[in-house]
Length: 131
Image 1 (cartoon, one colour):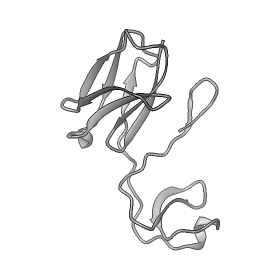
Image 2: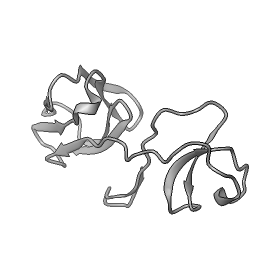
Image 3: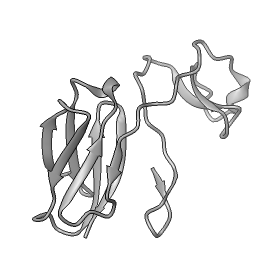
Image 4: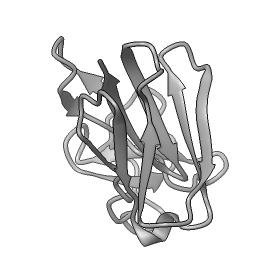
């Protein structure tokens, strides 16, 4: 994720399944959709023809309220069913883990220290602030 000083998301990348020895690049270079292609090795991404079709947009976790004070609600798309939900602090420490069994998950954050946290479920990632 690329965040501004107010923690607003400016850009983010969610990685789907990767292919060994292949690149994952925006085509056209830096602005287009992500494709799996031959590595460009410090060259413009248009210089190499992609080898697979464009990936669909990755699933999105909706977190609300954000910032959270007492309870954090996570709306998880069906395509993430079967993956566990992990929450880590900015140092990577695992704070919470639970299986994804319902479309909406509520997490008690009332005892968590204030700060920025990263929520991950399968290939989907989002950030939340706890105050």
